[in-house]
Length: 389
Image (spheres, rainbow, N blue to C red):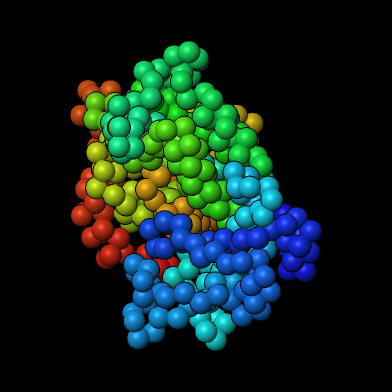
């Protein structure tokens, strides 16, 4: 929602808010925060709250380490699991230098800039929707995570086999209280594996919601005596967990250009869509395609156009270890390249590339199959250098 700083300050007084969490993200997408007393909020709006950037991996060195957090009032959320008396609110922050200029390693700033660029250069708006898969594991007697799944249910099973039903409901209720409405949820194929999907939203909101979602899932799982695992391949021999990204364009006539742009650059951006070694244990099997091609409704292709009245592009390779702000940023720039250069997509693939015999005969180029290879390609990419300076 759109608030003014004055409205937020009035809300803080009227609703007995005592603490304010100022949240931001490191380059990996891990959420960080500083908590201030509500009485410090006017100072935060006016001058920002300083933090030691040299303590954040990938940010600044010790000789130039002061950066400032400025709360973004449009992101205000009440933390519903905290006491109603003496409320706690959270706002995501813009990161700035002491002179007030934006910090260019702020991943939210990178995404804002990309959104502005595609609007200015191409005259279109994109919306993003995400589909998250994750496992729920039991804890041992010391409260440490195990690899014992919470249940043995399968795809879209119901209770009592599906033991995650109540936890998913609590997750969805909590998100709703924070102004985020999930589209659907269900049990996935793996034992203890769950999925929650989200409606399309403006890219920055979608990335904020994705980050909030992972935090809420881990919090609610812990409250239930469980561990929520978003790693891409937590159980060998069982399905991996992805974070499918859906893109919708305000001008559907540009969909082919966008699709072609993403296909052209997917190899270069794979390092940012799949940034862990474990990511590459998932790709190439069990509905995690690695062939650079696309299809209509075809889940064995890396990109696909799902059935339905609202054409969208689904990217099936990403996983939840990615930083959604940087992932969305790079996908938007790939879309810009596709639109500006009128790139055309190849013919859609109709074969099932998960069929071993079909896959053996296929000649499609593949995305990198190791983290080391993906990093090397990204490091040498002029496309990436022009965005992540």
